[in-house]
Amino acid sequence: MSLSGIKIRIIGAGVGGLAAGLALAQRGAVVSVFEQAGVISEVGAGIQVGPNGVAVLRALGLESALREGAIRARAVELRDHRAGARVLRLDLDALGPDQPYFLVHRADLIDLLASAARAAGVRVRLLQKAEGVVPGKAPRISLANGAESRADLVIGADGVRSVVREVLNGVQAPFFTRQVAWRAMVPNVIGQGPEARVHMGPGRHIVSYPLRGGETLNIVAVQERAGWAEEGWHREDDPDNLRAAFSGFGGEVPEMLAAVERVALWGLFRHPVAPVWHRGHVAILGDAAHPTLPFMAQGAVMALEDAWVLAEELDRAGQIEAGLAAYQARREGRVKRIVGAANGNAWKYHLRFGPLRAAAHAALRLGGAVAPGAMSRQFDWIYRHDVTRGG
Ligand SMILES: Cc1cc2nc3c(=O)[nH]c(=O)nc-3n(C[C@H](O)[C@H](O)[C@H](O)COP(=O)(O)OP(=O)(O)OC[C@H]3O[C@@H](n4cnc5c(N)ncnc54)[C@H](O)[C@@H]3O)c2cc1C
Image (tube, rainbow, N blue to C red):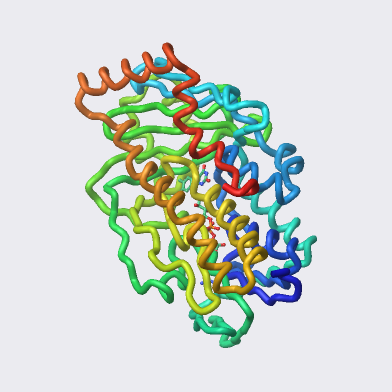
């Protein structure tokens, strides 16, 4: 089916919504994106885009623009929290020259997608908050401003608190993982090179990586705790709370944290992958379909993969329902595996019992020393998966 002339409404101008808008418009669809916010903006934070996400951006024609503002990461280093001793270095160059792993400012990625989508004819409409969707042959969106909109297809790319997910699946309560995360950006006071570093301590870890020419460091710090914190990006916290939580960390961490002036805190919640992704010409993608914990750095990348596959399967199929069914069939197993890996990853950094931690570190070090290639290859199923070549 050519998508020529098909009228598509997308709810949400995040990474997933904008990428889907662009991919669908490139195949001839007439696309509008409804965004609740008054400006398309992003929180000041970094995002890691692994090779499988870069493959989608390349196919959308955005790789060279991405390279201009991004840093190509050369390695991921795991370090012990006490003095920052290196436990393991995963060489990302070993993935191959055609498999770049980028560190990007979220706002830069959103700008890139939004300008390309607009240039491809996508209409991005701001201050358009969707309140409900009625599935059917001509699905209907009702907006908070009282207006209604009809289309041939409605796509919910409305993130972790998706209205469209609820329409398709009912309410699925997430549960608090007993972990919270702080996010901050600071000047690169430690002169960190083009790599992601994970400092691992008992019950907590800190990830740092440089952005925008290496002048800025992005910090994500995760701590296990019993208390609940609200899910969401924008809750400010006192930087001293972050410093207190990581006061036992040595090496470069104290200097990095001393530079923090503003910090956001949020609770990390586990959500089930939505069982129903489409009904009556309404579909969901990205966090709306499968919110994930951040421990594999694949949430936005999965949204990019979804966007590509959705456009390709709609284009290939003879009709919308068949295209949507093929989209879910192609994506569901993969996203469940990645979400599961992210769920299982935190404990690996957070071992509390000293001897166990030492043993785990030794095993990691040995693995890295004996077979660095094998350590990197264990991520092949994630990074070498290329949806633009049928994956
Ligand atoms: C700490 C942290 C670090 C992360 N790091 C990475 C990383 O390194 N790499 C990676 O790939 N992923 C990462 N992620 C995950 C990533 O941020 C998300 O998976 C990704 O943003 C999902 O994109 P999306 O387009 O599905 O949803 P969102 O980015 O949430 O976009 C949803 C959009 O929909 C709009 N919207 C919502 N409701 C409505 C409505 N009712 N009407 C209209 N508009 C609406 C919102 O305003 C928003 O613009 C991280 C997440 C966290 C929490």
